[in-house]
Length: 143
Image 1 (spheres, rainbow, N blue to C red):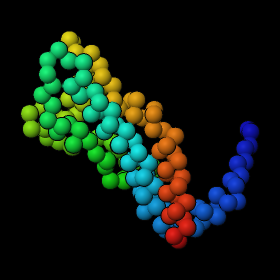
Image 2 (cartoon, rainbow, N blue to C red):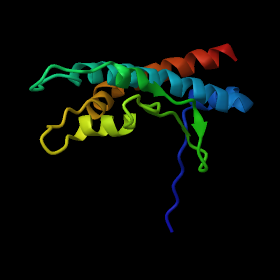
Image 3 (spheres, rainbow, N blue to C red):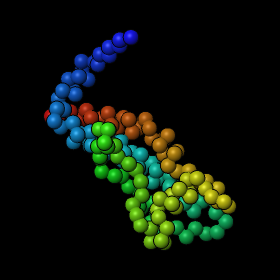
Image 4 (cartoon, helix red, strand yellow):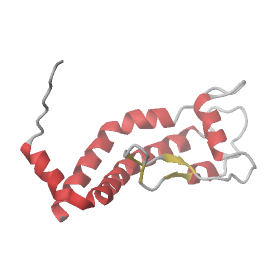
């Protein structure tokens, strides 16, 4: 059987040791910082695609874009920390915001797709990572 040893950089190990019992709180703040970057990009993309390229004048109220938000940081059953960019419910028109967003993202019969979430994820990846790194550094410095 093969054996593999991974050694983490000393600087990284010192930072991890500094976190100690504050790890969950710090990770939550770091994830929120990254999530805010993705959220703003998604919200901008959504506002750009709603009502564009339609045969008729848009009846958009802005309610869908306003319902887009960031969940609080959570730890799942496997111990992974996460935040989610998603839609609050309900929509005043009786249809769920998630359904409306899915129709916009993927299209439907007679309505072409107008992706806004997937491009937001791709376009904000590096900025999100940088924001999370900066937030981690600032949180470690506070300890």
